[in-house]
Length: 264
Ligand code: DGL
Image 1 (cartoon, helix red, strand yellow):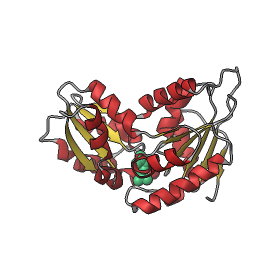
Image 2 (cartoon, rainbow, N blue to C red):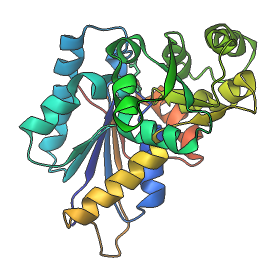
Image 3 (cartoon, helix red, strand yellow):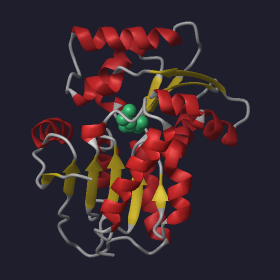
Image 4 (spheres, rainbow, N blue to C red):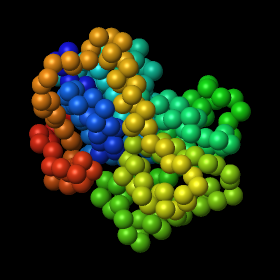
């Protein structure tokens, strides 16, 4: 079906999920909204995150999206169920795919989760992991400084490394063999996170499994784009187009077209 998939996040983080969807479903068109001007969501009250998330959803519904991906863990934690209940199109979040992926990987069922304050305090990962396996041992840590690093495109260097080291010191005394990046911004810091946490720990981001879920749902609802058309993606940001383009172009390794500033 020739309608776009909507992908939303508080900023550039959801691009990590959008890229996987584009890789696994190359015929599909993505309409992305990043609420960069109000990022981070992770330290905001639940009601505010829900209200901002609805603004992005309404913007995309006017563009006739056929499916919505909430590519933000914080918004997934606070708003997924409400949005699923109230709109007609299929809606997926990123928490269950990340949890599934981690459980598939872990050998000692000892899993670390890092995310925003909102995500970690909501205990959404504990619920998702335990709904699948009650035996799982979970160690969680909110890493509040990570999102501002990513939004400033500060992904390497001594300053970024020291922030990552301080936050991940929490896991030193644990036996985790798997670490869930429970915030879609964090894959942009993945090389640094992997270096600091060590090669023995598998770092999991939810993009891959979320894209698989999107694919399965589109197939199930007979919504897949089957025609051979060249998709024309759009990227909307409430913040600076220049900074968004810089981060997005680096992440995709190619210049993206149709990056547009909007007001929600
Ligand atoms: N990328 C987001 C997440 O997955 C939100 C980060 C933020 O705005 O705090 O939680």
